[in-house]
Length: 91
Image 1 (cartoon, rainbow, N blue to C red):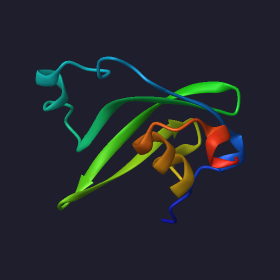
Image 2 (image 1 turned 90 degrees about the vertical axis):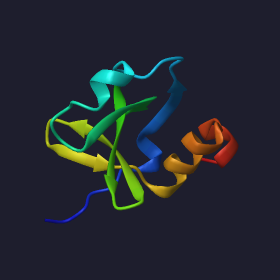
Image 3 (image 1 turned 60 degrees about the horizontal axis):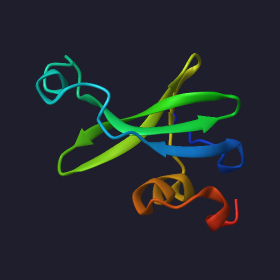
Image 4 (image 1 turned 135 degrees about the horizontal axis):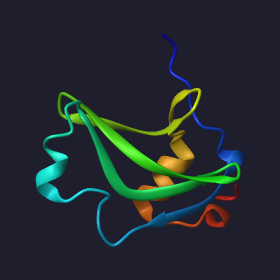
């Protein structure tokens, strides 16, 4: 199974909510090792919640689409991490 990344040209906006998608207690009982984050991105013409999944002591972030999960490309992930607008990255 190949890992598919987002296209940074299709990411239009980034937003961080004040609270995560689920309360703290509910996040530990999702059944899978998938945690919704407080971030959302506008990919194409729709808003998508950013999810994280842990592997050992690191995590990968992705969005869910009808065709499957798309892992965030480096530029988008750094923009979320640093709180930058996409224009500041030159995308």
